Image (cartoon, rainbow, N blue to C red; front, side, top):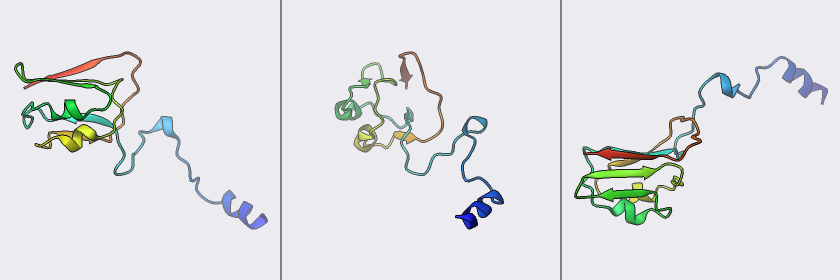
Amino acid sequence: MLKTLVKNLFSKPVTERFPFGPREFPAGSRGQVVIDTSACIFCGLCQRKCPANAIKVVRAEKTWSIKRMQCISCGACVDACPKDSLKLDSKYFTPDVTKREDTYNA
């Protein structure tokens, strides 16, 4: 035990100080859903595949909206998209305290 104690006294800490720098998420982590409206054909498959009913697609108006607090970031909409216009972004975003609905137009 003395050997481990001396080793830890003279080594760099393993942990990071989170609030003082942005957290780096590992590859494959699930963040929020991001859409590329230029590639979207507004077919509505993502709306039908969403288990939380967080996505709403209006084909006539060419609008795509998502309720961020309702989305569970499962990736079912990303897998169902035929044009690969949806992605799960792994960037850091601050938690929201209000319910909002993001709407994107073509």
